[in-house]
Length: 447
Image 1 (cartoon, rainbow, N blue to C red):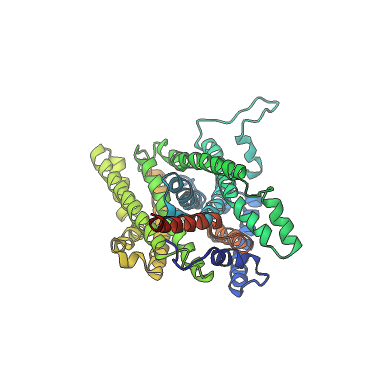
Image 2 (cartoon, helix red, strand yellow; image 1 turned 90 degrees about the horizontal axis):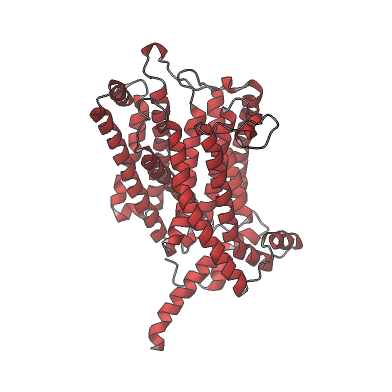
């Protein structure tokens, strides 16, 4: 997994060095300038939505859900790969996760932030979003728990809180290392406050491992439950093309498929920018590519099952929507989504799974394809329902595009700040893995 010639001091310099270095690289300023510009666009779009209302969007009856819900599904899907790497692979004792779990967890937090904004803005009166919480008010009003919007309100913040705790607990040993190695008093004070008095004692490590495993178990359950809840927004409705009991499985697999594509998009530039080729090795890229291929095949199966159900059901409305997705006014979304599954076919061969450039191109195609997949599911079903008299072509507005493009600014601004001030790789776990390897290698000599 790790470079054989790496020592403990080398790992410290590789991972902590860029954080403690007072000189900020030029590429970071270029990235923050671009993402900051998009963030300004995002803030302008948010102000436009709050002051003017949801009429700024292209949502019309019957397509009452448009870009905001498409982007919610897409961003929440990206968030799930971080939890899969951090929680599920930790519980299954997959050692290769140690080099990529830190920035994957950060990706989860920032993607959930982007996702959570969309349903609030889509409410029409976002300043009253707290009405969805069962707080004790004088009128005795409570949320409508039969509404999927109320489910999202509980599911997404719960996932965000657990993910943030899981990420922060995993940071404690590394932040303490930064505190001890920091040169300036300001950095030493900041990292000292974040480390919560960590001293590396046996009791600290014992509590750390217990809490880390507990949060991993909770996070694993949330990966399935949150994405299933997002699907329930659709499957509980009687809209043709949505009412499918296989929907939760399809959404969970599609979310992880999208998320692993984003993990590779982030991992490949990170390992080059920070010189981490000996920490994030070709083995890590290979394993991520394998998982992306497997999850992509599950998504293909879900699509095939969807068309089979439409044909087998005997419902004229279901059959019409299935056919319309391929050749209707939004047929382009189906064929663009199909590109994602065509793009992953080279991953059957190891030489493609270990080529960073090839993986980067494939991952970008997967992200684009899965966004159009969400577009096809949401708009393709809503725009053509049971009544032909109510059919309407959905056309997004400038503010739809601005809010979507601006969300990338929010995501990458937060991500670049994380890269500059916190270690991008889990230092303590990488050192522990290196120690175990050296110990196992020395055991035969002792015998």
